[in-house]
Length: 321
Figure (cartoon, one colour):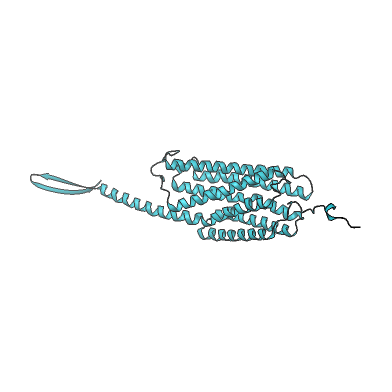
């Protein structure tokens, strides 16, 4: 007796914790892209002696390579929990060190253009925002580890998800504050409205050169990419482990993998070692020229010629004050 296939109930095959099978070629593509960017960042950090790029952009690249390698593993073994746990932790915390690089770069830009226009000093940008970034990183790592452990034990991972959500939301808040302070700085710079007055002997306002303007556009684009990605991950985790957002692969590929790739490559192209160094050299030459002119003027002021006329005779003398 034959049964019409239309009336046969087919039980869907479980595809593991993702609710889909990660596409293999996409995972390979992102592993390659992040590997190239990370190697480039390492070479640039060594060339320009910017060692702070190692625990920031390079570390972010390594975490993304780990996360996407784990997803590649999952594309071949979608039911295994170990690669799922690895990619969960790796892709969640990877952009956090990249945000720290943006904080440091903004501090250096402010130091060049005029610290008196900023609410925070360049050094305080690094201390305050990077400290907060490290706290967000730790929170997200704890949440990711908790969620991964719960998945391994087949228990509820809600608590881990909430911890991760808190870490990402805190990072989102830090980015908003950072962008607000940066906007205030550039508005004060544009309208020559310093936040505090500095001694004339301190570094004063400098014009924004073409090189620095390009660097700032790159920094803004990088921050925008990470901001949109953070909004996506916040919505994803708030929606739950079985929600439609986390269960849709293309959302993750475009709004996490794609945006973080754009952000990390932006820092390769608009690297502070290239653009800030060029601007600093031009500024140094300009400042040296100004100093030479001031020195020459001072010499003329110190050399004071005077003429005395007496009984039809003219006497000329010169003296140093």
